[in-house]
Length: 239
Image 1 (cartoon, rainbow, N blue to C red):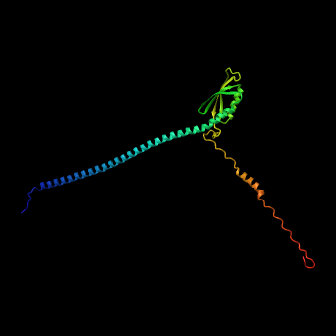
Image 2 (image 1 turned 90 degrees about the vertical axis):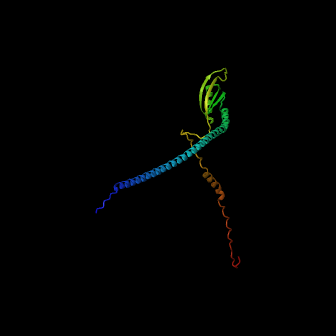
Image 3 (image 1 turned 180 degrees about the horizontal axis):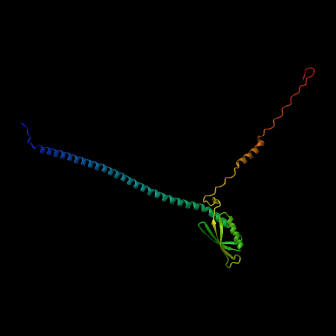
C-alpha cells in the first residue's frame, strides 16, 4: 500500500528558510553595526590625536612668539646700549679733537686775519671773520688745508664791508673736520686702506750688531812661542 505524507511540509520549509534569512539578516546588521562602530572609533581616535598634535603645536607657537618678543626686547636694549656706546665714543674722540681743533685754529690764522664767529654743524665748521685782503684769506685757507684737523675749505663769501679800514674785507668759509690719525679710504670703496707694514729693521740691526761685535770676537793673536834654548856643546862634553 502506498504511503502518502499529508503534512504541510512546504509551509514548514518556508518557515525554516524565513527563519534562516532572519538570522542571516540580523548577523549582517550586527556585523555592519560593529564595523561602523570600529570605523567611527578609529577615525575618532585619529581626530583626537590630530587635535592633540594641533594643541601641542599651538603651545609651541605661543612659546616661540613669547621668545620672539623677548628677543625683540633684547635687540631693542642692545640697540640702545650700542647707540649710547657710540655717543660716548664720539664724545671721547671729540674731546681730544676739540683741543687739537682750537690749537689748529690758533696756529693757522695768519697776520691780517681775525675770526669773529665759529659755528659747528656735525662735521662741518663755519668760520666768519675779517681780513686785510683777499690774499690773506687765501693764505688762511691753505693753512687750514694743511693743518690736518680741517680739510676741504670752501669760501662762501668775501666782500668789502664795514667801517674797519685796517680789516676792510668780511669773509665766511666752511671746512670739514678731519682726524689725521684716522684710517684713510683713498680708493673710495668704503673700506679703510691697510696701513703698510714698516720695513723690518731687525736684519739691519743684526748686521750692525754683528759688525760691532766682530772686533770683539776676533781672537787675540797667540803669544809668541819662547825661543828654543840653543845648547852649545864644548869639546869637554859640557854645555
